[in-house]
Each structure stands twice: as structure tokens, then as C-alpha cells.
Image (cartoon, rainbow, N blue to C red; front, side):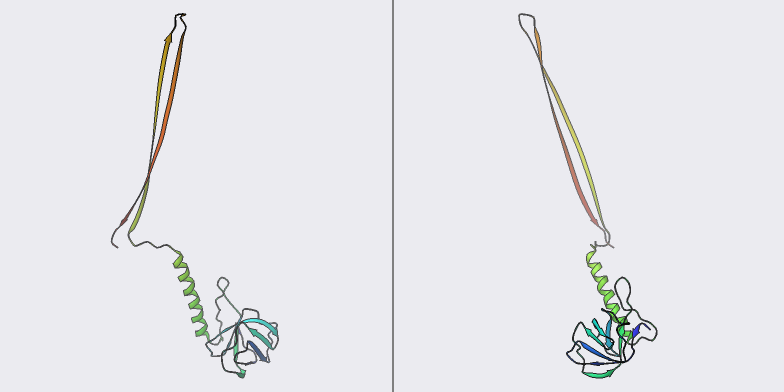
Amino acid sequence: MGQYQIGTVNVTNGSAIITGNGTLWLETISISDLFMIRDASVHYTVLTVDSNIQITLSANYVGATATYQSYQIIRNFTTNYSFPEIEFGDFNWPYIVTEALILVDTQIRTLADRIETKPVGTTTTTSTTSSTTTTTSTTSTTSSTTSSTSSTISTTSSTSSTISTTSTTTTTSPP
């Protein structure tokens, strides 16, 4: 059995301390296990295991003060999301399954909110066009002097420009 159910408990409204009768909690219960009175619909997280006959919950008990109550402590959880596991003989399993489904539903909603969704039939096309133009011009000047010496002055200039264009087209067709 996955749940620990040996002995009974005494619970006090407004107190986080649970007292056990015939319990052996030090060897079997861990911090973060789930405690609940049998057939109740509220569970509590174990904050500390104080002794074999006392545990402290992370919140005050909200039910009626009572002694020698049947209880269960859920000890087995799934690896990734710590959902409570159900085993043969466990009590309150419909409640435990419902709680786990609520946790799964919350996780799925969180993941879905992170995903960007597009309407059905939407296509996005992106194209990029580049064009490069280079212009070169040369100017030469020749001059003569009376001493028959000639010189040539040459000037070269280059101009280069690049033009890039990006366009995005979105087309939506009916589903």
C-alpha cells in the first residue's frame, strides 16, 4: 500500500500539530508527504516529522477537533510533477485522482499559454532581395610643356551601393 495508515490520530481545529496513536512516523513518513483524515476532502502537506507520534503540517487543521481518527498519509509521487500515486487498498482514491487531474490540467494550460498560436490556414512567406551597383569612372589629363616633358594625371573614383529589401506576405484562407 502506498499510503501509510497504521494507528489513529488526534487532530485539533486551528493547530498544525497532529498526534498519533500507535504510529511509527520517523521511519515511514517524509517532509512533503500528504496527510488527510480518512474520507475527508482536504489534504495537508507534512512540514516536519517530529517523532513517531507527532507530525507538524504546513497549515493549521481546519476540520473539527477529534480523537482516534483513521487517517492516511500519501507517500508515493510521480517523478516529474509529484502527482500522488494510487495503489491497491488506498483510501480516498477518487479524491486523489481528481486532485492529480487538476494539477495536470493546470500544467497543460500553462504550457498552452506559452505557445504562440496562429489561425488555421495562415501562411507566412518572407523573401529578401539584394542588389549591388558599382560605378567606376576614370579621368585622364595630359599636358605638354616646352621642354617636351609630359605628365599624366589620372583620377579614379568608385561608388558602390547595396540595396536590400525584405517583404513579408501573410495569406489567410478559410479552414
